[in-house]
Length: 245
Image (cartoon, rainbow, N blue to C red; front, side, top):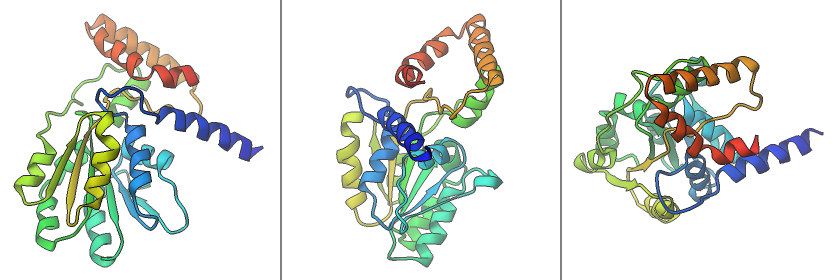
């Protein structure tokens, strides 16, 4: 029974990670599945708090040799990069990959200098959606119109290049697999900035009545506040997810 339940859930999640079209931004589900495909079989993954942890849990395959580390119960932002530095320094032969949120990385940009100084070949993957994404999800579920969550980010790839790292920026799904493979094959510390869909919903296994009510309240309040474009963007971004529910 549990096996069949898992297979149904796996099929649904994999369908959401399929790439349709070649225009950006990149769906975070597709990004993390692509990372899973190019990463070593003994890679260590470090996920920032928020949606990077959720996507990592859903799309990174553990095989007994890989490791997934994070803040988890502590819920402290910006954990991925400093944790990765510790792992890479203590295990120089392992491939170390971060799934960094744009908000998390921005809090500790100075640690990029540590990568340069210590020559740690970490692959820093930044999910740049221009927002504190998980906070926005929580606000939607509580019926609150999003505010104070938008981020005015620099180009993280350009910042990385400015401090002497290899920097790559991926803006389109059609470039994802090739540029990711090339970046992972590059020696030395590398930052891979991927422009991801801001309104990608991370649907829970079961949607409670309170969550559904809160989401409807958020949509109503957003429209009445003159922000109906955000409601439409959520619908466009998640049409496949909603169809599979």
